[in-house]
Length: 323
Image (cartoon, rainbow, N blue to C red; front, side):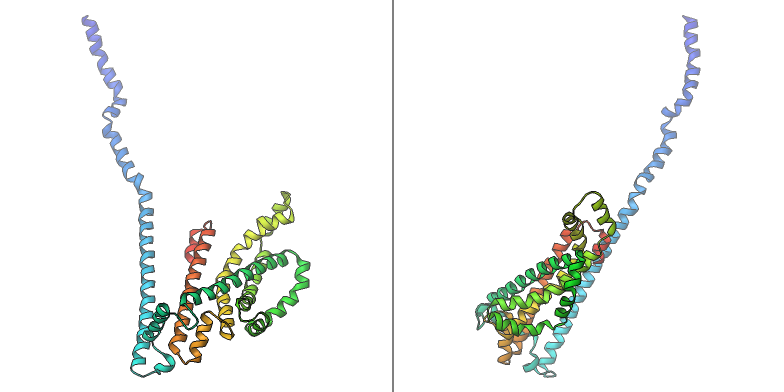
């Protein structure tokens, strides 16, 4: 028993000594503590700066947006304030140039009591309906013909000179012609909007169809895609960004076409309000109709921008912020 006890006691040092390499494991919290200590800054060290940079960037972007918005409002207040002061001080002729307060009173009067042609909202809807219908027809015609001529060279060679001649005609002068053809109803205004919208959309769609990456087309053909499938699945998606670029400008043209047609001759619409106000020397009415038209254009532009961002979510964030 004694030798065993001694053996046991003699085995303790080798075990303890033998455990000495592993003792840092027990002791080891102290030796591994530097590792965990060293790992503790290393783990958050990588994401922390990027998170801080992202927060700083977001804060800077938010501050810039607020600065831009504040500057816009300040500019608006300065311009309208100066206009009001100069008109009241009779530095400028209030009869011809009106003043912001008179314009606001005119808009309120129209909104509350209506116009000589009917409700103000009816006039807005009438003009918007003509512009939207003309814009839709012009966009569809421009996209279809632009893609077709961009894909079929023979068709482009035949119709190209005629399209250039039609594009060279001042399209505003066609409004009286459409008035003779279609009368005072909305058809003549829709036609005016169509001819103004068609050409910007057509040329963008045509250029987009011509600028498609040839490698994509060749790969699609190698995979057995027909011409129709290449057009639908390669050409049109590639030309979509070109087409959307023209949509913002073209809707403004549609509004111009509807307003000009109404100004020349109509039974309802904002253009008729402008003409009627001009005929009675009501400068405030002219500016009020223009202000309402500007608001309508801004709202539709915002809706188009929203739709474009939804459709092009696949674009990199940098291009979206650049826009």
